[in-house]
Image 1 (cartoon, rainbow, N blue to C red):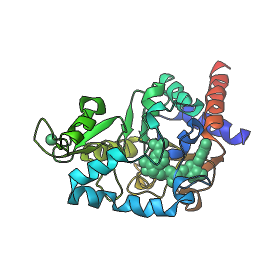
Image 2 (spheres, rainbow, N blue to C red):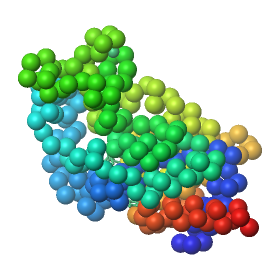
Image 3 (cartoon, protein in one colour):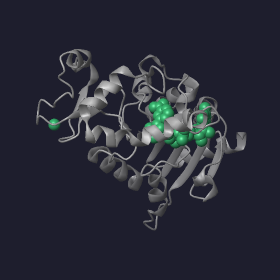
Image 4 (tube, helix red, strand yellow):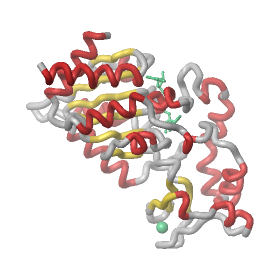
Length: 268
Ligand code: NAD
Ligand code: ZN
């Protein structure tokens, strides 16, 4: 593994525009379960997965009922607002500070990259801390809305102050289109990068999982994109040779070692 970490360090140092893609795996060491790992929410409770797939249709059909159920229910992932970033999140902040990482595109809704201090973050599947108008796409901080009061007053769903559209949580549900702004920015980043560091994702959720393929296809004759995975297990990207190599293990251990190795090489 040490050799692969050295190789990744060298690749990052030589890169012109490196970005990171992250998934639920980078947050398991913060105590948030993933979906498809051995202790994942879906792995343990396949029925919850089936229910999650119906949620967006339920929202469209009856947003008032959807909100009422939402406010009554307990999140499958626990209380995300109490979670703290781990060494993996902080290592990505260091890479950004060193000028080696230009952007993080995350599938996570836990807001831990921002909490750790990463600056250029695209929340592809939204954030648990925000709400979003499904009509005009405006986002609002969750605390701007007194959801519990709206519920007791029978005034759900919340409405957008800009266009009166229906507001939902910012987290993108299964079957819900990716909001246009984050979809566009992510495509631009994937096309622009010459190195993609993919951390803790099973890479089976689309269209997110198209981003590495897009980066791989981009060929301008001069620069090839290097794609590195850091994951507990091989993924379809590993098996399909979309990634150049996999550093197998925990992001909370490998990412800090990667930062340390880069420092050593640079200090030489
Ligand atoms: P996933 O559950 O499908 O896959 C997680 C992957 O990470 C697995 O391959 C697993 O083996 C690996 N992994 C787990 N812990 C790891 C660690 N410490 N180090 C390295 N690898 C580790 O997750 P996904 O690909 O992100 O897709 C799930 C979807 O569900 C995402 O779209 C995301 O929006 C959502 N989700 C978010 C959170 C969160 O916000 N923290 C948590 C669960 C699910
Ligand atoms: Zn609106």
